Image 1 (cartoon, rainbow, N blue to C red):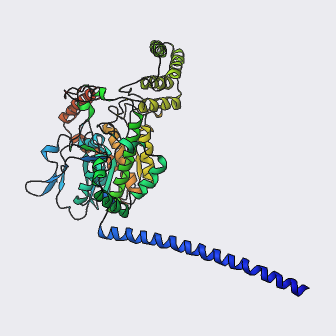
Image 2 (cartoon, rainbow, N blue to C red):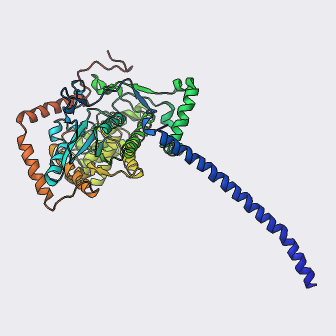
Image 3 (cartoon, rainbow, N blue to C red):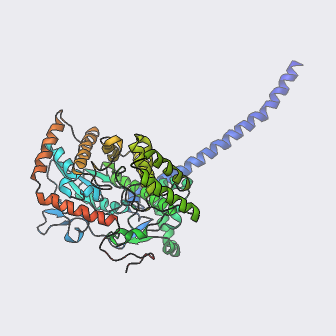
Length: 508
């Protein structure tokens, strides 16, 4: 009986074993099929890279193109140096460097907008110059040449071709400081600006693959109509900023979709900058620029949509009452402003007044929150807004690119921890002392990355070299800077002397 039972058990197990083996075999075949498919994909990607087909850094920006691109630097008449040509001096300050890099020297290119250029002064007191002076003061084993590529009103999308140009000049390091100028020029984003966040991440990954771009380019060649229908902004080589027109503030209105499109484009540009530098094996360092929070009212405020006439009248009355009470009864003024915020929290001027009152009352955290809200709700965003700051930090982390937070650096040295007018001369531009502080922080950053070794007395050496350079500057240099500052202030108020801007977007 026992033998019979054992036999029946053994017989019943055989189909189970066969089914298990069959299932394992099918699973193995599926895994091998997937691995084979992936291996083909890897082979295609490797072949594309070896042949230089579909190089991501050579692809057009899907958001904007340029009607023509003029070089920022050209050879001098005698061929001894590269210099900014006269046609580019409207946007770039005079700058040059040897055509042949001297042996034992290192060349650093600083890319960005007017903050990099040193406005309202110029290159001699920009952080790029202080960095060059500091490097040469503390490291006599290398001749450092820091080249200033700060273009007035230059946004991140204009820095990509600029970096690609600079690759031919034998760079050793790129420093990119950008974020303030993203809203200066007219661009539209169509469907791109509404891309789902779930699709954005895989699309960024695909954009790094040569095989993806090779396939896309082939597809577009086969579908000419689709290529011609793609939405694309074509910009001039020269910046065409809204505020270069008289009454340019009229061009700005609240547009959350456009803001999202600008933010996505900024993300794309930063990642492309990191990719261009990385593929060329050139170290890159990002700098998050500074914003005046405590001493800069918004440039333009706009009420939220949907306010009724009675709500608008109540809001205006509360704001007027609060302004009359600010000096004599700050608590009562704060209560009025809080009431007004309940009606419309998107009115930038209101948030700024709230920040000032919180600062007066010693609640500095609340003050900072309101100042940031005032900056972010500014209808004319001439200061880097929070979504762009977040994007820069995320890209820095994702691409393992070092980041110097210049705003936090200067904010830590400001009254009540609120960055204002002591270290900035206007809404975004650091004072000369501010530029010096950024340069010193960059020195420490470069030392941490192994680019330079700092002696124990490096700060005193740098300070002595800074003082010598500062004392060599003429009074005319500082007077000219003050005149430029006045022009910048007119510009931010929409009072530029360019053609008149009309609500239709056309100039007269």
